Amino acid sequence: MDLNDYEKLLDRAYKKIPENAKKSSRFEIPKVVLRIESKNTFIVNFAKIINTLNRDARHFLGIFLKKAGTMGEIRGQQLFLKSIYKEQVLNRLIEDYTKNYVLCNVCNKPDTEIQREGKKLFLKCGACGARLEIKEK
Image (cartoon, rainbow, N blue to C red; front, side):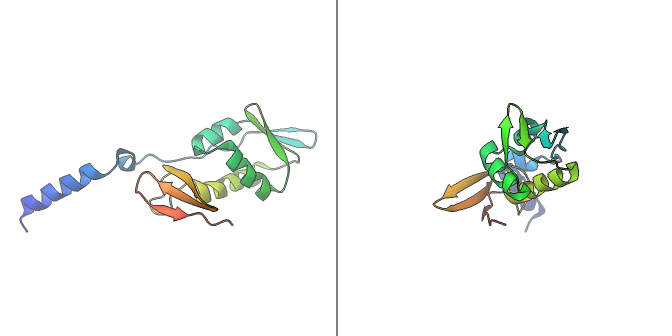
């Protein structure tokens, strides 16, 4: 193979890569900012976390509250939890959610969306095109 042909093939392949896959930005989940009132916890920056994860708040809430083992609701821009929690515990729960429902298992990018087919959920990556079934854990 001629070296010029190889360069042309590389250029052509690189042009086919989606723009969002070329970026090497580091994805960071915001750490929770808490406010404790009597026996309740408020995640003050809940709206920022949901926007960063780019997920439906109801989907996140259903899984998050189940893992936390408590009741809660969205109040304005905050999440109200019916118990006292430490920052480390809530941050770990959000990281677990991100690993299972946001980051692509193939390219590890957050450019994904959840698709439902019947009773199954799939994580479809916009960066690499991977489509994997989400297993409930």
